[in-house]
Image (cartoon, rainbow, N blue to C red):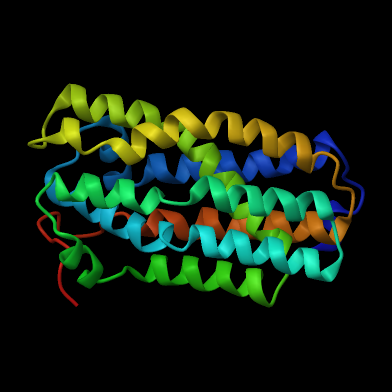
Length: 236
């Protein structure tokens, strides 16, 4: 893995990260239900599934990012990246409440959401990111954050607009807070992260961040509904 990035520095290695981010966008666009979410044609069951699965990973974003940043500080490495992780932990705080609000407006109580079955992709996502945060390379969490914020920049805002324009889901205009807010915020976040990451020259850290971005690209599409479009994830 190191040989892939040992000669990469500055914008060159961040360009590799952008390739992973574009790969995630392409993977989402190729997934039938994901495509329907972002073009506005998804049915209520599919959208609820997406929001519930997103809740089950987004609720852990602040702990994952914050623990990674604090651990990096304790290790005495890359203080700028440690501060970036802690900053991002603060930026993500409370986003799960947007999801609960959207779901409430679609008729799902918090108790139902909490009891809903998690997809294997959610368990893989949270397991991988907690591992890197607590035991692996804590900087790797930035790879996950980068590609997901890139996806939000590319699809979330437009998705919120399309869902409201198509209006295939009752009360949808009160249920796009999460998408609309991420679409508005994450464009600036991606540019800021890119500027900071361009200054990272450590090949092992570059490789760890790229690997985590690649893992997220592979895992994330699995949060969308598969198979029978009539199913809701509201039972364990």
